[in-house]
Length: 274
Image (tube, rainbow, N blue to C red; front, side, top):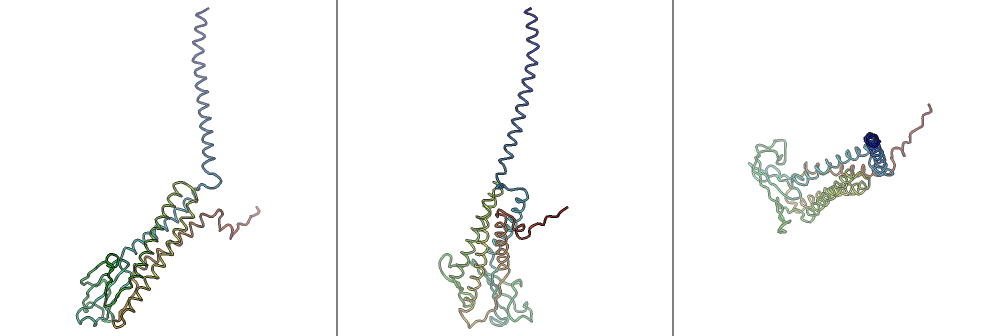
């Protein structure tokens, strides 16, 4: 009798173990499915999370802002904001002088008159071969002003233009950080401050160009005895395009931050009866 009971008990243990293992496995699967459902519900709380479509739009607008930032850095870091040139026969019959400067540095270049086109009244252009010399503005360090063509650049206006450009670059950096946080965290909260940063930086870039142009006009008016031909160069073009792209990126981020689609408000879809 005892042997029969022991055999039956040993035979029932694997069956119970198998049943218990199947029950545990089913419980784990149920917990997994339940946990997955809970994670799915919490990953998109009341429209605050970013969908794939909206994240793609944010990345596209951020690409526009990145191009604007790159053009701003290129324009601010170069010294081709304005080109100045005298008449061909002012300096001597063999050489003539041209100059160009930006926010930080001024460069002069001595050209041969024979290389200048006969149809051109002033010296230039800058791409002609010649001896060049570049120096940084001393009024950032020692406070001394620079004399160029017996004229002195407007120190205050040049410094103001440079400061506006630096503040604009700082706002661009803050806007880029906000967009990176918005994409990594998956929330729309950072889109509005990013819009403010990029729009403000674009406006500051435009103001920097305007103030710099006023400094050039003040420089030309400092001595009327020497006539100079001047024109804004490609660095200003880069900065101007950058300002437009930054303002555009700021507007796009503001539109993406709205709780509704402006296109649906302006152009509501018509229900087609089938």
